[in-house]
Length: 105
Image (cartoon, rainbow, N blue to C red; front, side, top):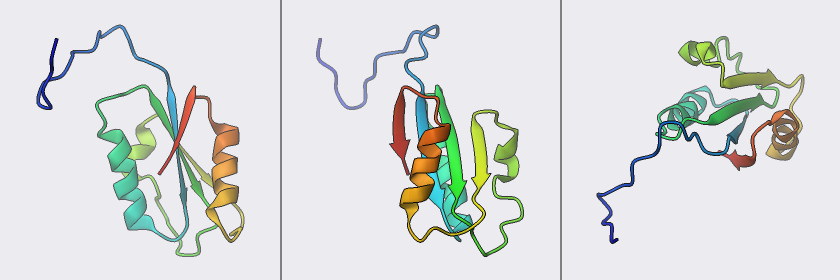
């Protein structure tokens, strides 16, 4: 069977596939954070968890998740200080992850 780029194979509704843990390390980028969260939320694959790790932002992000806070698949972790690189935030996110696969944004 041949498929073109515009064709797709419909997924079985009972098959969710493996869970993917998506980790977003962030620091002082509230607008980019919302765009990154939207890029995950708008996926057609729905078996994911999103772990946002703020590496001690100083911009005073009052409501980092906004309307996304109601989605139980999304968690937000604010680290007490900036660690100087995204490595610490990524590793922290990995420790929180429950998915079979891990992806970073």
